[in-house]
Amino acid sequence: MRKLKFAILGTGFWAKYQIPAWLMLDGVELVALYNRTRSKAEGFARQFAVPHVYDNVDELLDRHASELDFVDIITDVDTHTDFTLKAAAYGLDVICQKPMAPTLEAARQMVEGCRRAGVRFYIHENFRWQTPLRRLKTVLDSGVIGKPFKARVSFCSAFPVFENQPFLAELEQFILTDIGSHTLDICRFLFGEAVSLYCQTARVNPKIKGEDVATVLMKMQSGLTCSVEMSYASILEKEAFPQTFVTVEGALGSAVLTHDYTLRLTARNESGEIETRQQVAAPPQYVWADPAYALVHSSIVDCNRNLLADLQGKETAETTGSDNFETVRLVHTAYESAARDKVIYL
Ligand code: 89V
Image (cartoon, rainbow, N blue to C red; front, side, top):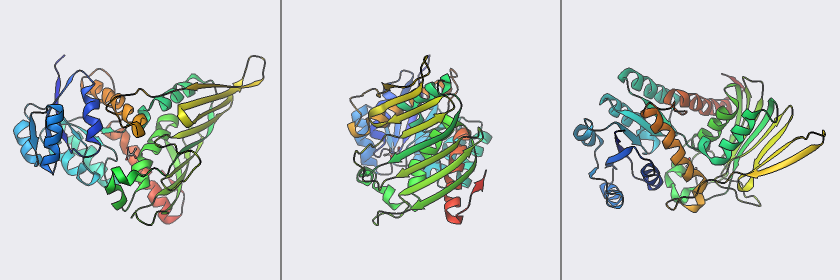
C-alpha cells in the first residue's frame, strides 16, 4: 500500500513523542514540519530526517499540498481552527490535537468546514487508547459485572505539569479543557452519551490563571450516574500521574482500575461467594517515551494507528471530529454549569 504523506504543524513539547510514535507505523511518510520558531522545527527535521521545514503555514501548504495526504496539527489550541480550515481548503485530511478548539462555536466551524471541504477530520484524543482503559472496556463489554449503574472517574495529581507545558498556566480555562477533554471522553467511551451534567470548579494554585480542580456529575442515557473528578492540586499519599482511576459498579459486581495499572474485578464465584480477582494492564514501553508519561505516550501509537487505518479505508476511527465534538460539548457545558451553578440538560 502507498505510504500516506503528511506534515506536522507545531513542534513543541508534544512533537517529541508524536513524531516517533508516527514513525513506529508503516504506511506514513513525514514530509514537512512547521513551527513558528523555525529553529525548533529544524532541530526535529535533523533528528528525524524530515526534508522540509517552514515557519509559515501558508507557504508549507502552498508548496506541498499537492503531494500531502493529511496534516497533523499539534500547535496550541488557539491556532487549531485556523490551521484546520486552511488545510481543509487545500483538500487535505486533518488530524488535530485535543482539545479541538477554544470554544464550542469554533469546534462547530471546524467540523462543518471539513465537512463542506469534503475532507476527513479527526481529533488526536489518546487517553481512551491507554492499555488499562482498553482492558476495562473489554471487561465491561463482557458483561461480567452486569449492567453498570454507577461510576467514578478520577484524575487527581500534584504533578508539575506546568514545567513541561508552561502555556497551560496561562489558560483562562484550564483543567476542564486539558484533562476534562480526556476524562469526559473516557466517560463517553465507557458509558455512552450524557443526558444531564452538573459541575463545580475551583482554583487552588494561585500562580495559574484557570481552574485546577473540577468535579462533574453526569446522568448518562443508559441511566448510569457518573462522577468525574480532576485536579492538579491534589497532594496525595501516592502520586499517580498520568493514570486515570475508574470505579464501576454493576448489577453483578464491580471493576476498579487503580494504581500501577491494576484492574480489580469483584463478582460472585460459582459457589455464590464474592471474590476479587486482579490483573495488571501495563502499557507497552517505548524507548522514546518520557518514563513519567509512559502510559500516555504509548497510547499515542494506538491512537495514530486507529486514525491511520481510517485514512487508509481499513477501519473506522473512534475519535472523528464529529464524535469528539460531543466531548467538547461536555467540556463547555461543564463550564456553563459551574458558572450558573445549575444542572444542564443536554
Ligand atoms: O494530554 C494532555 O492533555 C497533557 C497531559 C497528559 C500532560 O496533561 O497535557
